[in-house]
Image 1 (cartoon, rainbow, N blue to C red):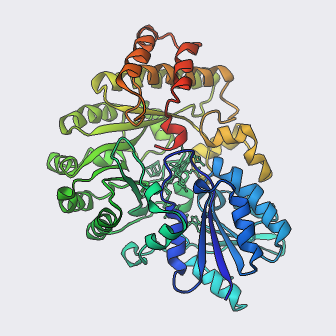
Image 2 (tube, protein in one colour; image 1 turned 90 degrees about the vertical axis):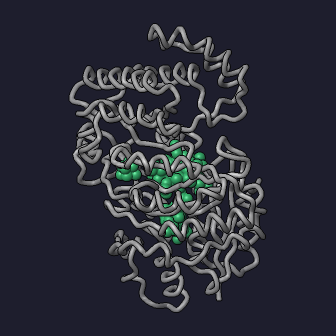
Image 3 (cartoon, rainbow, N blue to C red; image 1 turned 120 degrees about the horizontal axis):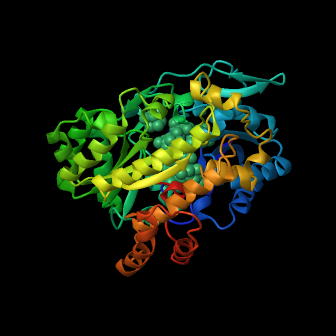
Length: 499
Ligand code: B12
Ligand code: SF4
């Protein structure tokens, strides 16, 4: 039987997270197909490693996991090189990028199949079909080309997450010692990445999760998650967890049940949530969550402007007033809220775009006033193809276009789009982008992120002093002195480096 090579292109320069996307895929075929993992984060020359495996003649199937942004920088040239040298291989891409941009990926000519969303069933079924020359036309979540046309098969219902096979951590450990996947972060000495649910029940119009999961969410049960956490703690010595779920706290019942189970394990943890959902949690639940070790929660605040929140389809129940009140409420529980904002959304006139930006800059300052501990992450709105959403229609109407070829995605301009820094959207002028980025520099100067563990007290004091006056008098232009210090001290940017 042909073997399978699974590749996680480089996604980070430090703090290597466990490659959960391909590890789930490895689990889906474990025991049925022989597989190897190549983790671009842990290899100096992943292309050579891949070519060496292929030269053995044993590997026919290559699975790449691809997020937008820097992962594409390795995925594209390596896929090309593989297809040139080993034409008979079958190239299968999965993950957020190919799921949301299937046409450009298949048009490249070197990707044969795309797994649209969860691959746990689709991937083994595709391999079985290809190995046995069976039809794959009815395999759910599959996208491919037939007679030059793109064919998108039906989507599968979300799978019962407790029924998934266990992740093959021990086998991963043989390729890459687990040690390095348990990095030191602000949460703990040995931080582990875990994914306990898929999808999200909401339909925010700027979010890449929506076109794939279409407002569906499925979670592992609290007991199951606890058992995994305990296994990871006992076997690999983890003392902290990053929950990578898009929305960990959808269910108050599950969050509290998990908290009660984990509270005596002395774990520190972090997860992502919605403000309007968690604002409905009882005080006793928030207290139980904190008591169980949850130190920071990431929230998509997005904007303090109720009109913009409506335009973003933020569920209809989140408001500027609530965002502020909730930041205040979190103080009582000693949980640090990490608020992410999306600035630079479209508006009918340039003046209105500018007003929206200025409104949110002032709003962020208000949040900081009520709870200075709030961590702020600022993104610039980068459209995702959420077809049918009013905001995406507006984006297209204003002349925005995604790149026409796969290679274009790795041009510096589009990489910057992926990192949500400079999104190339026609309604944002360079001055507006500067305004956002300069405010961010000054804000980060006055309030350096707690997630940067290399920044000592002295450095924090120095940069705060420098930024304080600018912040007070709203003077954000040309903050070169702050940028210089951030560059010298390699200031950590959660908005680029992830969380
Ligand atoms: C962990 C993570 C990272 C890690 C890197 C992980 C890695 N691979 O090494 C870090 C922190 C470095 C990171 C960085 C970034 N990330 Co990131 N990241 C995630 C996160 C939170 C979890 C991914 C994960 O492990 N999921 C768990 C697995 C089980 O789910 P999955 O990936 O969906 O995999 C399933 C399917 O997609 C499919 N599948 C996936 N890969 C493959 C491969 C094959 C062969 C097959 C068959 C199937 C398959 O099957 C899997 C099992 O069902 C996701 C959000 C999320 N919750 O998924 C964002 C996410 C993917 N990241 C995102 C982004 C934008 C980024 C950044 C570009 C920007 C940023 N500010 O975060 C940066 C830069 C990346 C870079 N440097 O390349 C976005 C993508 C948005 C989009 N427009 O598509 C997401 C969706 C977050 C979000 N909601 O905005 N990220
Ligand atoms: S709540 Fe978060 S994950 Fe869910 S759709 Fe909105 S932005 Fe995306």
